[in-house]
Length: 522
Image: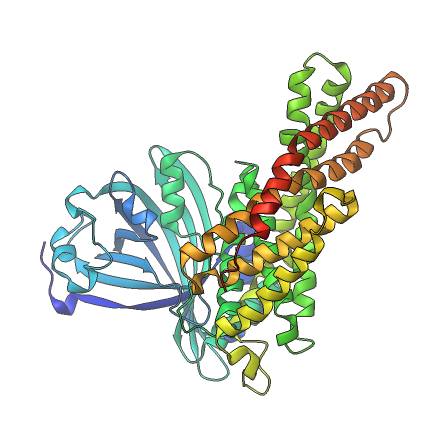
């Protein structure tokens, strides 16, 4: 194959992607709001693509994708790489495209393009092989905004196929062409007001690799936000919320598939982290700019709570007790009824994820960050413009002092006081994580690790309190022998857990002693 410089293009692709259903596609296409923005007729074309990667998926692990796609009579080779800080929306990718002569990969392009050396460092292009294919019908529309901007709206319907398996795709992409980024967000708001279009970070490449590996959608942990050493307090706020948004979205499929109990836990962590950074900053933010969003995040965490509670109850609280008394009829009945509650809780979580309110919340979070909703008169306050290290010192010192006060005399604290301590630990840990990238790892790691150990050491107290509430639910509607059996099982669980608590006491006190001697990293 041959190519020339005239055959290639590269640049930053700024787009928003949304999950749809077939029914919602039809509803959206009939909406007058979208039709009023459309200029010209919709264009339709079929796209067939083959995606390549190394056998150990090095490109995918770097957040990259490489494909050759047939568009009519034209073949285009394309490489995409993540550009997390590439736009105010945080949803952007670097893209390189070359005209080629067929669906077969042209390795000479990858070897010869100087711009790609950094991205492809350590990847042997000779080992690239076909991994999966896509067969997509795309409808494209040009949307002309009142202020003169142009947004490309593309709706893709089709399939991703790998290793004899396939999955359906229904997604919408809004790509920035010209104008302001605010106009891209305006179209996103318009669409989520018409249908429950769910903001997504799942590419076809991601779907292809999940399908190829056949392990189901994975759960994803949180990352520290990417920050420069001269970051401002505003930069930390923006990066932390965007990281939380991506973390939340990345775990939805795991929950919908019920692939792993960590999925719903990670969704709740993502929501709590976003709410935590907002409340951590509340004294720096204008009143009225964050309260509604913080409340929506709280409601979302509460809605996901039952699924997580039943997961913990069945997987942690009951596990050891049942193993110790595996033939007890009361415990067997408890497991059966708890399993039914768990199914109901996951059905509620699925309804939440597919709901219009959840879809609107995701877009609202993006809007809040991308438009800098905390600005007054278009300007950022002096406090938010200050160096992040100055802000961190004040916030983290206050959290640390409150934590030391809450844990004073730990051995003698009541259950209620220990619960308050656990909350203080969680707040201190989240706040420390938001600013951690500003400091050397050798200083932040011991502090964060000590907080994690303390949080886990006290977590069983919350698990037991939650378990007592859940066990009351399990006895509802029961009478006679079944009620007697469950109430006896309740006593067995509480007794087992209180015994386990006494065994953990030394470890808890040791963990607190280690933490209290640590020098703060800020």
